Image 1 (cartoon, one colour):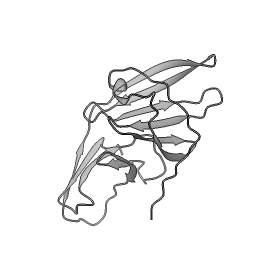
Image 2: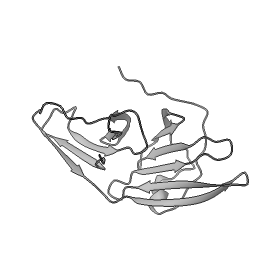
Image 3: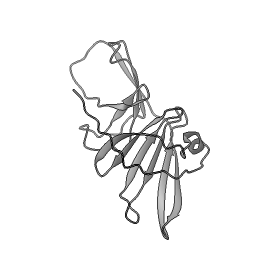
Length: 158
């Protein structure tokens, strides 16, 4: 099953209504591996599943994403960074594979948001976007060097 890039929920409760955007690359959270953020909030992740019908409507919109593969050099080693941009929302995903002593990492950004979601070694974290990263640059195809932080945050739900 392929995931919708964006789902819009209407006619339900205020807590359920909203625009849900796919967060590709996050696995083993939802049964179908289709994980969504709601209304641009990267700290809340959601899954959709078929249950007995409730009043309301869920629409599915697929958008052509812009994908760029950008080689980089770090400590004498050549690596590859994949940058995916949703031109409708401006959401950016940057995936950097294993290189040197660094583990693979996936970062999700939204324009004008001071937080990013970072997935590294099966750990999902919410971090402040480093000042050296300009999310709008990704929309123009310019890559930025991500600063690594030692401070880690964990997501929990009550």
